[in-house]
Length: 486
Ligand code: GLU
Image (cartoon, rainbow, N blue to C red; front, side, top):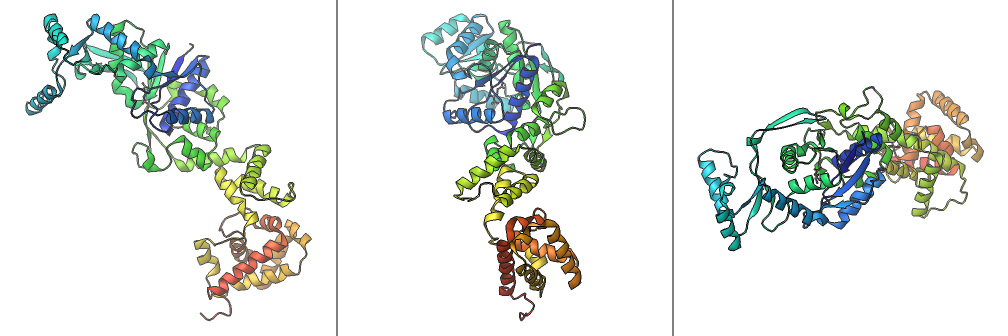
């Protein structure tokens, strides 16, 4: 069945993970059924809604590869229509004017608390007779409009949570129009969804409590009730609702960190949905084939940043060569680095190696400095392990001796580099690792890097010699050298 769905963000901030996932799930259903995915901007809170936020939300959706059908629908522009429907409900007797003042309501609340009753509005104005209403109106008494919650039970079949029954007496006569004649969310949402032809409402779990109210409104207007699917929350690793406190929560932040849109899309789909087998890396087409609302879990999903990074590294390693080259070129340009030879082979080799190791775009670009900058500092743990023992300079000195005698060409042959280093280790009587670890620290400043012999070949004689010398100097300055006085 062609399904018309909508994503209805309030433009009061960035698009966050939860919203993006809701948008993705809706978009998938529209694509799958050949239906429509509509975007409704719920901008009725004029104080908090901003144009900037609308733009951010739209650009984040587009970045994820999500495009909506038709023009976005701005809720605030439909205010008159919402008020008209409220008038209609007043006329049909499904709603009533409530003239109770704030003070009166406070007083009623106080009494209810003292008498240990629930705090629902006591329906005083539901029972006003026409004469009383007319009098109040002629006196220009301010009023809100309340919906007349009917007796009975409201039932619906939530596509994720199953059959749901709510006793209507657990819902008070709720307000649908404020005294300044602005419509309340409950009415605006129903009217808009109806007018937009939405026949499936898929949204966050936090809207479950609104659903019976909205169904009551649909019923009172004799409008067809859409299907509902409420997606469980996303929690942080501490099992508390995901928020800024847990680190990045907005799509923009992930974008800034160098997460790829396709991997974020893939990861978000797996938050609460599973294809039913073990597969995890799924492109959009595969997700589209397998996606089904019935397979959305009815319990909250836990956001796992490490897993997202893992997934991102998979996607990053698969990026086409052209895209990687473009990233690197832009990076060179941005940093004012001119590579005389654009086909610079060692640098291109580094790009390839780092593509396979990087977790994010930023991580990848950062790793390219290896070619251009000698280490400014060394990894703390690395220093402790490989530089700080007395005589730590010995092995590096031995290697330096070897390398000083070699010509440039020698540094291009990875196999020779390896076998010679191993032979040297044997000659000295240590394992090759004993040389490789401090050497890696000397050349890269880090404990982990692509293969050390590949690194040597990429850097070439001049840089390798200079970096080894720098490391030896560092060790000597710290008084850890063979001949230093401890
Ligand atoms: N504007 C609401 C929100 O951002 C969504 C309303 C709805 O989906 O019904 O949470």
